[in-house]
Image 1 (tube, rainbow, N blue to C red):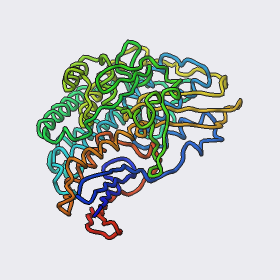
Image 2: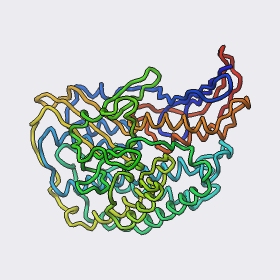
Image 3: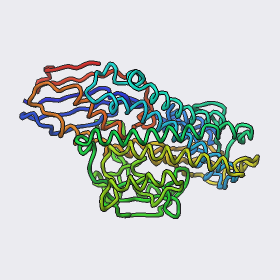
Image 4: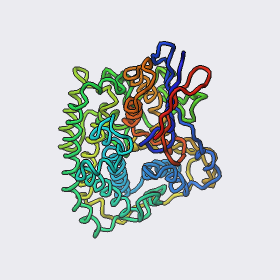
Length: 477
């Protein structure tokens, strides 16, 4: 008797989704799907708006990573204006990008994923959350809150508020950094470094604790895609596209982001509103690739800050002789390495005299009718592609979101975890097993509001049904 298990919605992620797991007559997993079942259509309703409004509008896609959309949208505007922005504006945009990375990664690691690791996959779901984490390890939870606050404070100092700040604009930024605020930000650096050191120590202990479970958490070969500097260093604000395979071979390098549509296609499936991007030369679905922290730390030749570079070398050792880490569980480790890099790089930017200046915007009119912006959001590479008329009115927009680019890999991860842990012959599926399936999705820290722009409450209901639709088992949180 075939059965289907449904997890709807998936919890402790940003947005709405569900997972279905189909069992055959023997109780073995035969098919899984990660469904994103909400839609709001940002691309369509930006049509008719002015180019100058786009950073502020597109930042509303998400309350977790609005700065990433601000930056990428403004860069698409730079392209349409055909200008190079002033040096001070570039430094300040980089500062915003790193602050966004830091606050988002801190939320993901300390508050969304740590409850699984520190309380256990099989712990009571009523306490397996940030409140349970506070009760179990108040100091770790406090540090996570403070680290995220550090990133948010920088965003607020630059843009006037923590979220949806209309500070970046085509041509640069609206306001310079107040020199009096620079020392205030620098005062956070020692604590932030100390907290990231705690996070790194914690994740390494977690690797030992879950050594038997980690091999099933999305451990497969795929392509990895991200930006690097011209000399191969890790990059988040600018750079060129590098594509690496699962054996550590660079199969494409120094690709201009403006030509992204030549490299990547977008497939659709009838059971999800989230598109399925793929690498065109390998076709769909063989062109599956991963983006985000795991990809960025994999593909770069070096990280340009000393402490993070030492961690990168330790990370690469997990990949064996190829040096390529294919297990999605190590997204968490890569996320911690990027937090360390962000703190180190923020300190460097604050010590750069060019960061304090007043020349922050290049003024120009519409000089092109098409523009493309690209940057690395916390969850991976992000593209904004705009078409405008001579007055700068948006005619068409295409946004390729990082979470969507991980869609094929997230589905593969669900399949692997479910196949490894679920035994349908037992009739009832333990809640902790289903939580492991969800935890596989949380490795990617998906931002579904970015991808489908939906918000709402997130209870969890799991139903096990027979071939006639009869409910055989129900679990509710």
